[in-house]
Image 1 (cartoon, rainbow, N blue to C red):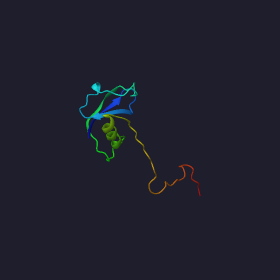
Image 2: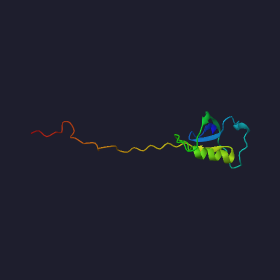
Image 3: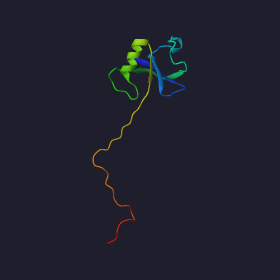
Image 4: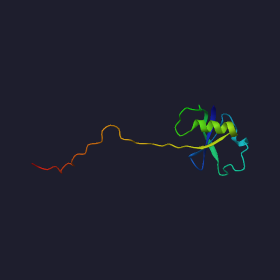
Length: 101
């Protein structure tokens, strides 16, 4: 599915995505829609393939919301995990602190 993605001007981690070519200024949103959401275009003609992995976007969720409501409200999250690989670092005495024989 090709989409246009808009970013909130108030919260850079909040996004509105719609089918590509949709004029968001003419869209009707429900009464409980985020009243403070003002958006600017972030990406155009972005191809989202459900089941594929994307950085910061759950493609399946965005496509499901668009199919159900005509738009998707979503956030962007990046999680970084650092794990040690291989052997643990070896500690050695600090320079100048070595014992003399």
